[in-house]
Image (cartoon, rainbow, N blue to C red; front, side, top):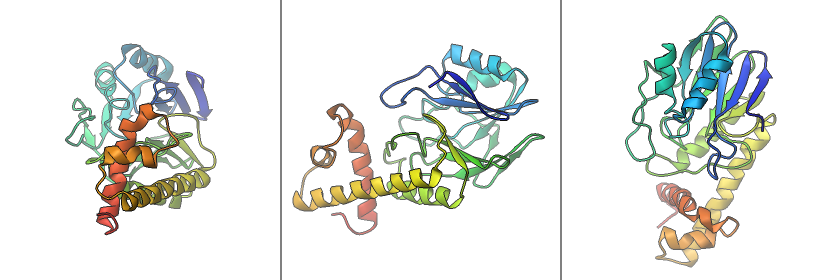
Length: 262
C-alpha cells in the first residue's frame, strides 16, 4: 500500500506510520480539495506525519474532521490545528479508556450535519457501534463514504463495550448499506469499490459469530467470556484472544438485550 496516493479528483490519501496488528498498514488520513483542504483523521500524534499532511496539502488546510476519538485517529488533530488554524469538527470523546481526551471540536457535529465548501459537500452520518461517537462522511460529489473504523478493508473491527455496542454496530452497517454509495474509503486499507458486498459480508460474519457465541453459551452454561473465547474463536491467532473477548462480550450483551442470552 503506497504511503501517498491520488484516489480521485481532489481526494488524496496519506498513510500514517503506525502499522500494527490492529491498524494494518496504518491509519489513512484523507486530504480533500485543491484550493482549500479538509483533512479527515489526522491519525496519531506523530510529528513527521503531521508535517507530511501539511506538505502534501500544498494549499491551506481549512477544516479537520475526525471519524472518532480512538488513539490511532484523532490525537494528531491538536498539533495540526495549532499549525494551521483549521476548524476542528467531530463529536466529543466519550468517557472510558481508549479515548483521546485531548480532542476538542470547534464545531460539534450531529447526524446529517453538512460541511459545504466551494469544491465539495460532506455530510456527517452517525454510525455508533465501534465507538458511540463514530461518524462517517458522505462525499456528495463522488458518492463515496469515508468510513473510519466502521468499515475497514479486509477485516472486521473490534467492538469494545461499554462504549462499543454490537447491536448499534450492525444497525449502523445496515444504514450505510442503504445509502447505496459508489465506494467506501476506510480508515485502514484500500478503497472498497463493492460496498454492498463487503457490508453484507461483515453483517453475515457477525451474525455467524453471534450464533457460535449463543451455541457455546447454551452448551457450556456458567463459562466466563474468557473461557468462551477459545470455543468461539477457533479460527484466529490466540494472540488476539484479548481483543476477541471484547467483541464476544459485545455479542453476549446484544443477545441479552434481545432476550436470548442468560
